[in-house]
Length: 325
Image 1 (spheres, rainbow, N blue to C red):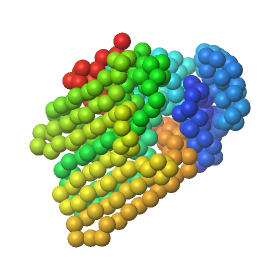
Image 2: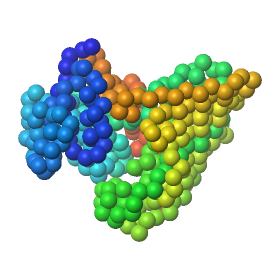
Image 3: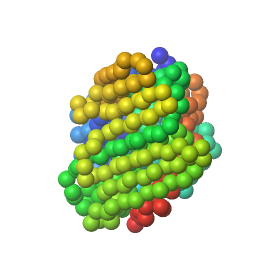
Image 4: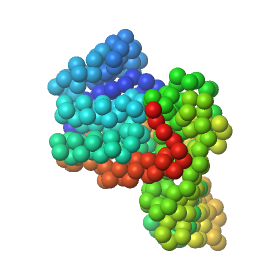
């Protein structure tokens, strides 16, 4: 274990609570401070999750000299602003997905981090999870063959509320950035950036997309399909079809992780993983490991991957006619 780091939470919402529970699993992570624009909200969050300090101003929060790392958990629409503010105060940053609203914003964020030589990483959950790492291990062994097609999906049916972040265009709402980012990320991780994208969307009354489906095509003829929606309950899953078998990855409702391995001529294998607090601590662990090693970005989720991801999301939005106000 390296040095102990003081963590701060910027944005005291639901996902920040889940992440904070994960931090408690790490001996080198100290739950240090919470920053919010509402001091009452910050104080309650600090009390609920065991942080030492609370602030009702982001500037005051970031001016604390003992704060080492900030986890940003505000809406997508505010990620650029808050990341740049953290970098200005020389704080290492783990920013929740989607990294920002568009490629231009992500370029500004990554450019500033690179210029200042300060650590920055997008908080992409799957690549650090045991089901994902096991799938990568199996693919690298080669017995299952080459990836031919991927079918990835994520949907659930939240109650419709025009003011809710998911349906509010002013907050970067819509299915694509909220949950569609996961299927897109899986496809990019396993197959790379597509040469051609086709996509169609349907829209909620607020104008944000409530459902999106898409096809990725690659120069060698391979394809991948994605689906995300606030209108159905497909859950989360990625099916990887290979030349000699299949990998079926999914997260089940109780939070456990499921991986089925089907290789031609062999008995089907099933792996079930149940990381504590759904594995949110793995991202924090990676940040501190990188800082111990003097790195300013992660090899698992490098800034180049985040740029490819947001650029792909921009391509999908343009093709499907999705606009933010």
